[in-house]
Image (cartoon, rainbow, N blue to C red; front, top):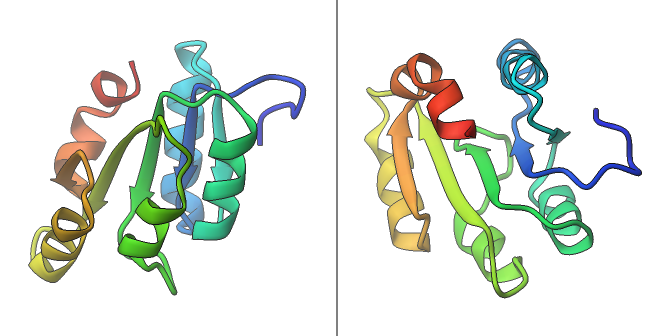
Length: 118
């Protein structure tokens, strides 16, 4: 996690520890503050309490309700980017229906990680 006194530019909702470490490590390498959270409620609280330009969401997060997450974000809300396994298109459909700004496959997100974080 980033220092709580530093306002993160990016909040990442990702319970996959391996992938969360990759997101945070890439952010640190490029001097981009990333705050990791485990639940949609923690994501809403993090975005509400700090200036955030991007919310990254692992759509496979246990208990995630895409509609509730979007509805709970403060206005103006940050850009919301979701990623999902390419074979599980139900995640794509749920995120698009909820109003995510962009939804990409996990492979594309991983390949273009720095581009998405910048």
